[in-house]
Length: 154
Ligand SMILES: [Zn+2]
Image 1 (tube, rainbow, N blue to C red):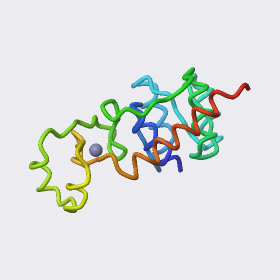
Image 2 (cartoon, rainbow, N blue to C red):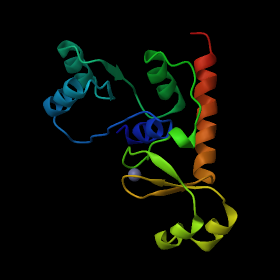
Image 3 (cartoon, rainbow, N blue to C red):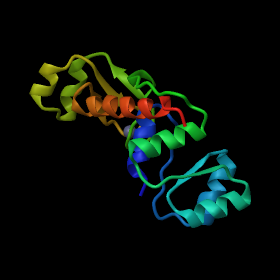
Image 4 (tube, rainbow, N blue to C red):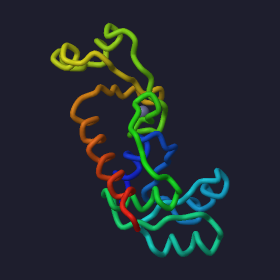
C-alpha cells in the first residue's frame, strides 16, 4: 500500500526496500538483520514490530502529510531533491549521469525527448533512464509541499 511512499523516498536518496505481501515475521526479521526502520500502514504489524523493539513508523498513506510525518520522526527537517544522490524509484539502486547521448539510442527513448533534454541518468541496477522532465517537476512540487509542512510549528 505504501509503494508510492517507497518510490518517493528512493528519489530523495533514502535507501528504501519495499515489500508487498511478505509475511510479517520475515519482514520483521529483515528489519532486525539489516537495521532498517519499518514504515507501514498496517497497525497490527506496527504493534508487532514495537513489541519486538523494531523501530517502526505508522502512516495512513502516501501523501505530503504522511511523508512529513515520517521525516519528522526520523529527525529530518527538510528534503532537497538532488538527482546525483537519488535512487531508482523502481529498484533502489543508484542513478548515474549518462555522459553521452549516443549510448541512449539503444534504450528506445523517443527522439523528441533526446532532442529536448540534455541530461540523462541511468539506473545502475535495472537500467531505467531518467531525465529532467515532468516526473522531476512533480518530485519538486512534492518536495515543496513536504518542506512547507515540516516548517510548520507542531
Ligand atoms: Zn532501477
